[in-house]
Image (cartoon, rainbow, N blue to C red; front, top):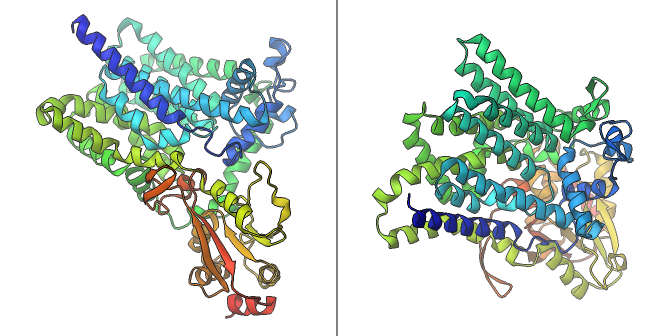
Length: 555
């Protein structure tokens, strides 16, 4: 490659990186300081309470370290500390270490780390298609708009995979550097999110398959990988350890979290996973929504075409990783889209590899390539409409303050965000509020209480689909609650839909939505934070508690 061609390639890579970073930072304050993502809200509070250790002795002591959330008054913490530490001290440098701004710094850091994967894909593929595809992927873009640990862990996992790929390609005398780099990157990923240790299982499995007939070589490589892994975890997250073992506070929190997300344990956020089929449910969400149908189709085509060359490292490593993550994560009861985020760099690599080999043959003309690029980018451009508009909860809050009289009684579903949100010059205390505990197990006592509350409610507010979409998935647990929503939506419960607010993917102009794509069929987590559908129901006439109970609880 000549200097001119190389310079052109670097220029295009720079443009792709800027484009991808811009998508991830576009309207990153989408909730206008309301902290509408619960994980981001919690991480902001924990980050603010962390303090700089006085010396290395305090840093490496989990019992004394001020970077240990359990030493700062928190009894439950399951996240990796590395993203919080990086965000907190970066925020201090820029004087953003406040509740109003640290959350935003976390989003900027998440977007930056995720964008680094664009550059990482170029160093591995030496082509521009893989970085381009990753820059456009919807799920990484969406998760970069939240202050969560996933984008941090995903970058370090991708870095570990890149080292492993180089090891399989080059091996030779430099193999210790590639394997040590793999282990160290995995350790940083685990320091960001402990479930990233799944990557270590994958790496060890590949090594065992490659050296099953050479046990001495296998043992040397496993020792090198493990030492680098443990060293990175100890350096980046020493609070995981206590004395010579695992910190019992972390272990208790992890076990507690594991018990929550079980079909046999009642925990409101887990209700959404009832009646979701292993593997089929995440595959549908990935291909239709989180990757998008255009790129999802290209990915399936790329897998079909490249599967015949599975023995080559450039095909074996990414395909094996995709299958490993999908099979393991897809079998879990909880199948959240962010759990599959580690697959996306490998998906981009596979798609890029396919396009590098076929583009010149099948799309020789410039106009053909322009049309193809537009089709591939279409779902991303439509999804960005979520951030081009005012968030639906904010728009609903503004409407409530303008149109609903002070002193009116509004409902709020327990475990969802109550509306109206506090805005500048406005306070939600001017309204009475009834908290409806619809996630409580169905019983006569529950519905007697809810009927008394409904008789007081003037405006019934559903600020997302969190409850009305998940509760009907568990009709054995919630037969009456399921009937409640069915009657409400049918207009048979003395309430009529008087206002609906959305900021869905689609096309908008000057704040007005011209065309919207209804993505409420996607998993709850995909819509419930940054673009929920808000429904406001107005009461027709007064009904007594007895009348509500008779309508809802009969039979």
